[in-house]
Length: 370
Image (tube, rainbow, N blue to C red; front, side, top):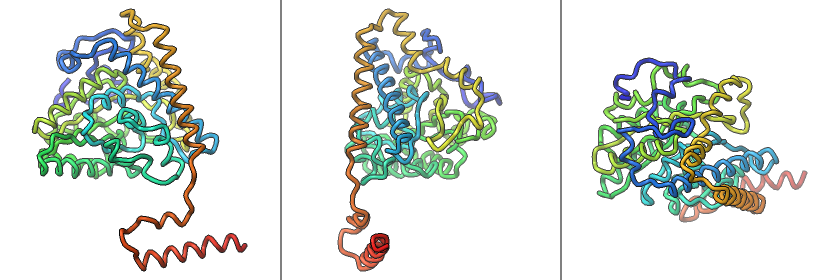
């Protein structure tokens, strides 16, 4: 389906207008556009992708539990979006650099995050949640859409250096209405920067449905900037991997940016501070449960007699192990002294900063005196 000719549609119920490889019931669907990009994917790789998605869902549920128990200040769930994140994340080369929003737990997982990396920022501890230089993924971005500009700037640096890299940025459907995202696409297109824009359309920008925000499929916007796009079933991990491989090849070969819209669904709240029951219909939730990305791949593997009880047991054990390590890392974190916030701000001592430090020290001391 070409975004140039897409009709105006009800974007709440337009999953049939996406490119896919696996139908919701797990049936293999021939796709001339995507098939060649996953010609090397065998059943073992599919089982690995299945393991990734199950582990990610367990990480996500543990994050919610830790927040509910007061161990985290907030958590941004990604339940339902496992295929979009694992499929695209596993297509990346190690040297590609990712600029995420705040929901890309699965992309962090594919980049080799440690158990404590998932919770450090949400607990408010030292650092940017992880070492960006080790994972090749920028700090989580809370400002909606700002990371797209960062990705384009990095992409222009790749051009300057003549490097064989791609900058990849993830954002939600709500971010597409932000000026930053549109400005980023203008610059990326104008300079032919090697950037891949990945929009995870999970249908809800907090309480605003995507159908209210856009009367046209979001992938249809990119060609207006001169950027080719694909609109894929975001609950089909194979389609997401294939589409991402296409987009990365396009950007890496000097043809400029590419855009993906992964049509998926946020099964949980926007964050743990949100109550989706106030704005979302239970029937809609039930409809999307039938499109579950993990169940879809399981059905495909079962039909091919490629899913054993031993595999399922080992996957569940791996998921529980990661969750256990994540919980232990979270609870075991040592909070730095409050005044340490002033450390390493400047390379050399700074009188203005010292005055601020002294003032803050006096402020803290006032509580002890009281």
